[in-house]
Image (cartoon, helix red, strand yellow):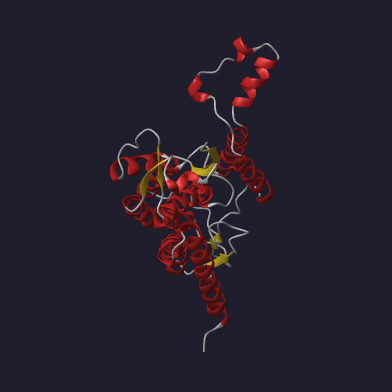
Length: 308
């Protein structure tokens, strides 16, 4: 007999597999595309949450199996709102908290990277005047992180003028995996990145870094282009003149994340033990997590571009 603690996560997993398959089918137009998209995305999300779960069990923490959140395509174009685990007991010390927190992003990106690379190998470079674009006036463009650009360069090469790269559903799932990793590694509150910051620095520094992260998200949400436009309108363009490489349009999604972080709180509950030293090995992992965050981050993750 399946226990309730196992039955609910299992049902949610099956439902999420179904909704992500449906989204993949709508994206690709084929059942194989739907299956591969669902398999890839669920594997990435599952690896992330199982990283937390396995280390939680290792340290005797009361922790649930991953709870996937299914969503019909008209609510979420990827068929899910992600996954989460519930920790139902206090964590003993910073070492345990660090291991549980960092295990998720490391495991998730370890699956997302090969998924993305394989997806690029199956993606197509298509001319903008081909039949596949003939009836499209606009298209969704995905942000280009350092990792995304590097893998595209290696697997696909240079995109010729007048052509676009049509991502295979597997590559799209890999891109989502990188984006989810960035969201979780934000150094604020009780996100995975917030856990890492709390374990490496003091509570005071954790609070300060969380606030800076919120401010950073607000800036990324608004962008610097409106500031330049306002300065030009007021005749102060020469005073505010910014170099072209720092002028960009914001992405409203970052503003929503800033609001969410403020609602969830920028503080962190203390662990049972007041130990502060996590060791050199964990600090190296913290630095690796920072590099992963930077290399997977994209200023404008999603935008709509005109094809005509």
